[in-house]
Image 1 (cartoon, one colour):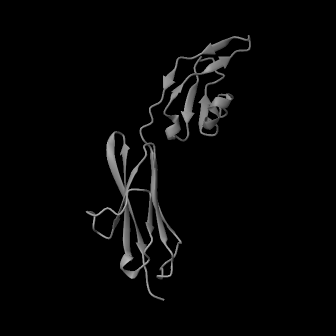
Image 2: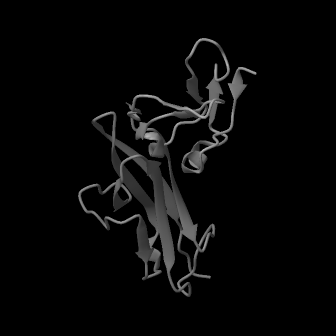
Image 3: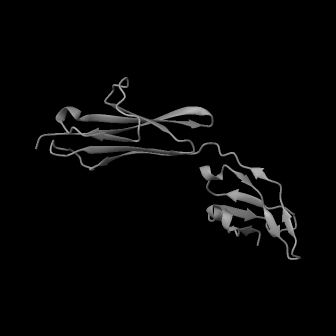
Length: 163
């Protein structure tokens, strides 16, 4: 049994199902931790305590992992989620969501006017549901990936009509 996928220490439960311990019971006197899925939480220091059958405990040196900024995705949702809206709609809530190790910054724009920022939060509210507020709303997400500023954008169309 060279591969074990469980972590027995409760402090390491967040690793359960994401790592495989290789060579744990081998005579090589080393164990390899193989990650199947890296997350931002893995950016930490690790130490291994092995409880031997003779009641002794062996402790490894402390090793650190530097996670190189995994980036997930950017999505925009509309609430209510409709193809088109009429002016009786009380409001339209646009939410931009990005996932990564560093907290992203958000900027909202309308159509192609990237000189006028509508908002700087992940949430943008259209409270005046009027025909002139129809258009393409653009969310630009800025984050740091591997020490470099990266920008991602998503666009959502809001169509406001009478009746």
